[in-house]
Length: 295
Image (cartoon, rainbow, N blue to C red; front, side, top):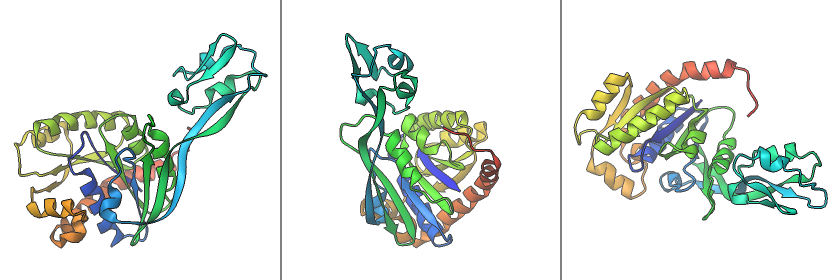
């Protein structure tokens, strides 16, 4: 079962919730895996403190053109939606920074003049934080597209057990890649005008993806009731409310997992986990029965 923790904006406490859920789950589950898919700014390792055992390159394939076999027919350029490969004069130019690694160009080439070559854009680190399996991605500086690294992180998850996915903030392609096959999505928000605005964007995203979801309100005793009213109007379940507690802020600033450092909050995250698992179980069963389609 895959539980994704996301947010419409950064700084809402998404990683706080994700790491605390992973910790309480590890006390009750035989297999728990934490995936840090925020590959542009990974910080799950700060709180879980895993012993990293492996580091694997991550990336995607890009085209390499054999100019001697190429007839300059232009089929490759016509196929590419991103202008990553173009015919200019008597040569074919490839722009790796635009390539999405879809493979369309080498399938379209009638002369078989295009082959795949690996293009490394990041890495995946694997290890354990006590009983928690850990996988985190890191995008190379200057690399423009993080979804291939996120895919590599998700590929490291085992087929069984509970998987907690710490998604990137926002609603762009990296977030979509992180949560698109999740059995349930937790949207972490805060009771501020910015929090409400970005929660609405995140809700629109998960609804388009047809993922079951609920909300967690962090620093819930600040601000006003606008977020609660919005959730009530939209029929969104508020799964938990985390107070604005100085102890939580202090533990976070020291890199501590809240449910471990502050045992008083353990029952809150355990109840949140139980509620999410109860909501996610029907979706997970349906997904398991659905025929797998190639992507």
